[in-house]
Length: 165
Image (tube, rainbow, N blue to C red; front, side, top):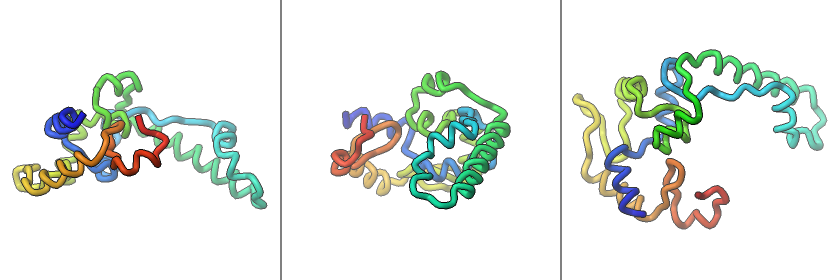
């Protein structure tokens, strides 16, 4: 198990998903999974627990209507959609988790433009450069965790997690 984590780490790197999403937020040309576009009734059922014991149902209904509008707008902005099947075939758990083809040229360009590197690397004038000390620290963290769907979960937290694979 450990050997495969380190092999994947050396080949693909481990990235900060928040940084990736921020870098890609302004780009609509990145190959990505089409966002779901549920209607009002579907979201109302999904978030029915919001309504228990609430006095102001009107505000909650308005909130759900806004959610529907935002989801529809995001879906319309995707110009390079990929299917869930295509995403799985990439064999990149981080791509599948985030819904983007992280191996595409568009993503690589966006990450370079925003100077984002994998953990264990620092940005230089020539791009991402491996930083020996950061890399060592990350290897120690990997030894204390379990790889699950593109994330590293600390072994001590595994017993508290109901969603481990």
